[in-house]
Length: 345
Image 1 (spheres, rainbow, N blue to C red):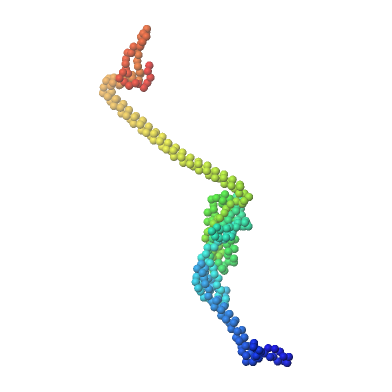
Image 2 (cartoon, rainbow, N blue to C red):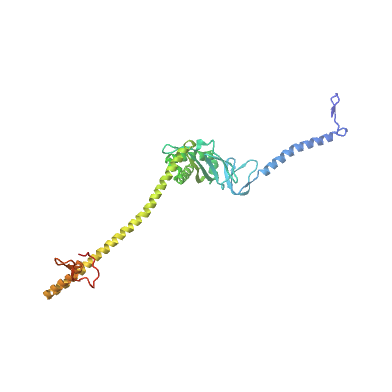
C-alpha cells in the first residue's frame, strides 16, 4: 500500500497485485478473531490449571474462598473454583520440623556440617551461680492444626524461637552451672519441652512440641582451662569416694561377721558354763544325799579322792638325810602315770 499524493491509497499484496476490498475485509476479520480468541484461550487455560490442586502425603490443604475458610483437604487430587476464587495453602503437618539454637546445619549427608560461629547471642547464658555457659539445643515440633498455625498467630516460627530461648534462659538461670554441665541435662530438656508446649498452647498456635535436645553444653573458650581443672578435681573426688565405698563394703561385712562370731562364741561359752554349773550342782546334791546317809564313809571317800587328785600334781617327792650325798627315792608316785603338767621339785 502506497500513497500517490492524490489522497488515494494503492494497496498491493505480497505478489504485487492490488488488494481488493473483499480481501481487505477478510484480513480485518481474521485480525479481530485472533484478538478475541487468543485471550479467551488464555483465560480457559488459566481456569483449567487453577481448578485443581494436589496435596502430598505429608501435607494438608487449607482452602480459602474469598478470604474465608472453606475446607481442609487430605492428601490426593482435589478440585476448586478457578481464577483465584479458591486459594489453597499447603501445610506440612506430618513432617517433623526443627529449630536450631546456638548453631546452624550447613550441609546434610554422610557427614553433617555445622556452623557455630556468630550465634553467641542465642547460646551464651547466665547460670544461677553467676557463671556464663554456652548452651546449644534443638527444638523438634510438628504442625498439629494447620488452620491455627496459619491464622491464629503471626509468624509462628519466630514466635516459637522467641519462646524457646526465653524458656531455656529461665531454666538455666535457675540452676547451678556444674549441674547444667553434668547431671541436669535430661531434666532441663524435659522441663523445657513441657513449658514451651504450655506457652504455645496458651497462644493456640497449633504446634505440638516433640523433643527439646541439648546438643553442646560447655563453658566459653576463655574459661575452659579452669573448667577442665574443676572436672579433674571432681573426678578425683569421685574416685576417692568410690574407693572409700569399696573399702567400706569390704570391711563392714567382715566386721559384722566377726561380731556375729564373737556373739556365737560368747553364747556357747555361757551355755557351757551354765551346763557345767548345773552338772556340779547335781553332783553336789547327790554327794550330799550320800553324806546324809553315811557321813563317815562319805567323808573318807571324799578325802581319798582329793588326795588322789592333788598328789600327782605335786611332782616327785625326794627324802634326804643329813650327811648323805645322793638322794634316796622314797615314794615313786609317778610310776605308771603320765607326766604331770606341773613342774618338779
